[in-house]
Length: 212
Image (cartoon, rainbow, N blue to C red; front, side, top):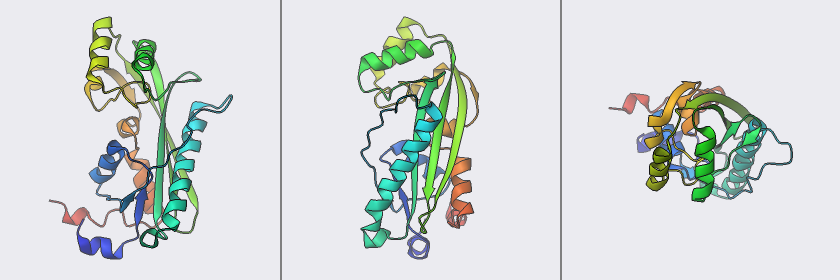
């Protein structure tokens, strides 16, 4: 996107520090003007379902970033995108793994079975309206040997990942069958995100003619 494009189009904020979500937005020609990650307590509420947790956290991230943006003149009136991904087996929500024991337990649980990935997107418009999309994807991992799990844990890609794996990395070799949105599993459903932006008047396609 050129400087002239940025000069006239509305501002856009991504409420995330995830390099994966930024890369996905850039893949469809959308370049945020700012990244405003927020620190939230992502603990599920009692009896909260996986899809409800994803939707709640996406909106809380977007709302918190919108409050920050409103205090910065260069971002006032910006569009705000928040997203969250939750991995589940049935009603059981798997953690965003921070220690190797969590990742090992998650991988053993997911080995050879199907699970669901719930990715929610919340777009807050310049008028303060919140729009939502939620995508559910089914994914089956191959049956993992103890050696495969150990090797994957040693690679370190599990850190901070819901369910203890990153499909866009080495774990792509474990993905046996996927029904739904690949980009949602990575962290941001591109079709739904573009639909939200375009539906609310953001000129998401403006930079396409400048791409080589």
